[in-house]
Length: 263
Image 1 (cartoon, rainbow, N blue to C red):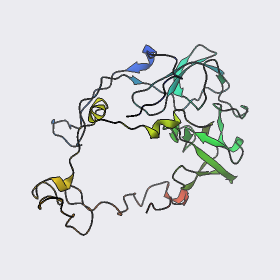
Image 2 (image 1 turned 60 degrees about the vertical axis):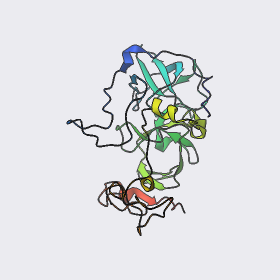
Image 3 (image 1 turned 90 degrees about the vertical axis):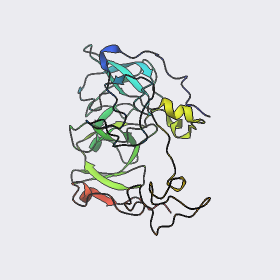
Image 4 (image 1 turned 120 degrees about the vertical axis):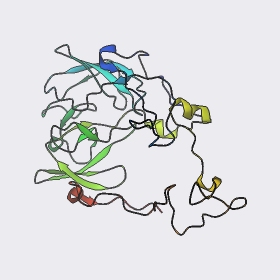
């Protein structure tokens, strides 16, 4: 079992005005029928309202705390703006209490500052990237995430994603300089079944361990092979190697290079 190093956190209780209790549905629909398997239980938790837009232009803010957020892999920071407003934002790598950040077209190229992508030089790492100006951050928001700026041309900024996909976004969209906090999150090993239950994840049974009536892989003596040409879900739908992206998705023509296949 391994855990994240929480020594950089500076507060154990969230800022109450920015929290709300979300109802858990445990994978059930409005009739109480399980429509998503393997969900249920878990520790009680409060949702923190995180400001992904950070659209208070030219108003400096000071970091007050660095906190744990049960709803996301990254840490969050409570920031206090000069006008007295308090908001949660995604904590960036190496953030410290007392650091000052700002959202501005003329902001200095300092980690944590937020500015339009056209004002950020090629080669910089950015996170919490807007796909459309004013939409709020959509890309690179999980722990340790960042995208790299490859170029600017004709109103578009070219980005290299973590998956090695290369795509375009409007250069007027805002992005935060630097990398998201909690980089070691992907190294965590849960270590025991109970820890999954704390996270609200119920057990998953292998299809090959089921009976033929319950799964296309079921039946047979001992550890039998799959018995079907292609991998299938419990409902017999082909999975693995089948394209699932909507061909008519609006952003398809903005993707310059698809992510490489994992073999």
